[in-house]
Figure 1: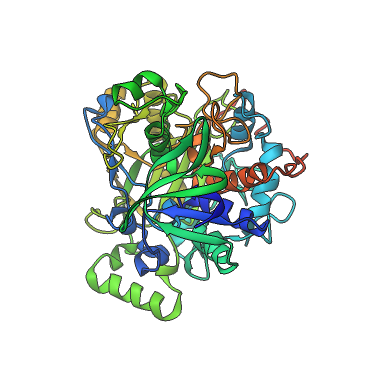
Figure 2 (figure 1 turned 120 degrees about the vertical axis):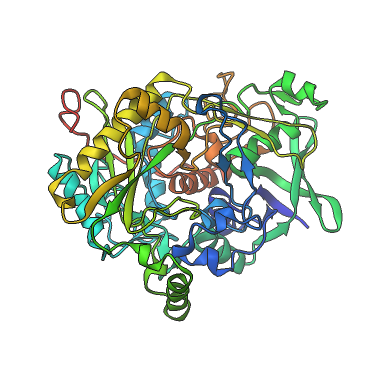
Length: 549
């Protein structure tokens, strides 16, 4: 098996790179440990809570006991399937804020400012219902749509935000992220539009992309140069060689693990596990970031929520309608309204995100409020807490140690308390008067700082947006792992391109930025001049220095 490029991981970035490299006439082998994405639990948007809890599709990672959350162990789902996490996620599409990328550039990711990445977002998008071709792409592989917002609760949420004095934005992925508005999703014609559907399958149809099923054990090095990947298959252990380069796109958990198993990482840590050091890169596995959120739940005074379908008969009806027609409730992820707001005056751009959902239920679908209810997922976007991914042993099959160190910075507690109080104010607006009966979660008895902190410690959940563990930066930066062209510093023939290279977590869900990373990395791999920078400017609230809204 000969390939110009070998990509480890058929996830969001890996699929995009395979497509663009194949488009340029290159032969690409994509190594993927997971299996097919053909099942209805993946392809039906309404079934989103199932695949991330199924061992066949998920790596099943979990954190170490988190010291600031009372020793809680939190699930860390990562896709183990064609399409990676884009096949098991909530399908929410958020680019992130323009200032996120300007911050990346300031941190040493030269050429990754908003002006630089906007052309790549436009290249990848096929936007349906967005603000038009100035800020949005209209002919890319990734279809992006909006739900019908038939349930009156969606528009009540947007109206309540407006009544509370916040802006309304028609397109948070366009010029203005700040405000309340419709949410976008990677859904097309009633099915999940994953990176596999958008990029990988069309690329494979062209004949230049081959999928190799197997478990990547380590990168094969000859001296300081990567030449292939050692893979365990049903037939045994083999080496898949790369004629030009190896590219790791295995997630912010598995990418640093693979680097360390290959001798690239903090020298002392590698020596502890008897691994020969090829490149001492202290940043490998460091800088781990995520978004936390809580589910603020409310009892409904009218039977208009999705609770009526939360039984075997209701689920069967929804599933049957989708299977027969591709339409109905099963064709939506039910995240159809959202908001991005600021915690206080002096914050330049939004640092709180809301997902609104017309049912009161856990993300994993394991627990639902008794009766009709609705909820907002709310959480601060720019936590200062940092964690790490490290090796448990030199055994490639051993899961890594994951410690996010959630809520280790005092500002995280302050931002969360503010988020809860702002949310209560929003749901207290006139727009919710016909629908809201009472607050269920946190509920009465959680008013003071200490009471809210207690609640947070017990109930805060990951939004499943890990990133940052192979940070991009200048080659002179001792904590950088890859340079701005995604090349691993200190070795040759090896790149990393996925959410692990993010210097800082973006404002929102990570699938969109991960695909953009694959798109841009492909041009760097091919040695092309990057797309011309944009001169468009984002909207920033003119009163941000003096007003919270």
